[in-house]
Image 1 (cartoon, rainbow, N blue to C red):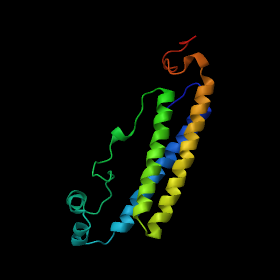
Image 2: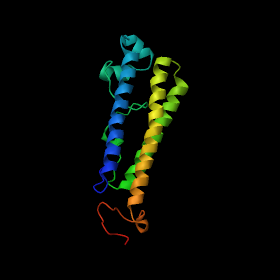
Image 3: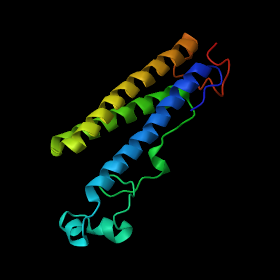
Image 4: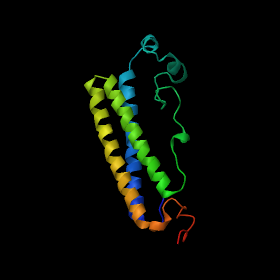
Length: 157
């Protein structure tokens, strides 16, 4: 997401995106720590046989339902308002996922980093909300949801 007319929003968004990549790395590290040294039989008894067949014990990002991570996870329309709402929704979905993990997992070595990541999702939701506020302040009040200011300059005037 790039806002040519508001560079401080760009750096704001870029920082959050960098943090999100670090979240993925932390989750991958947790999974690796939990599966390191497990035998094929242990992986199978834990329900990981299909995963093991494809990836052994390597890290392969996928949803809990087994759907692999792909570029479809990144939603972008090229419209500042639409994209920021999507970003805020993604942060809330991640927070909900962390809440669900915390309901299921009792291992403190897993729960503490998950609590940290959950808190970061809340902060990122707030930061994206601040970015949305900045974008809305920048737009002419007659222009809300009527057009894309990045491609239709002067619309709504």
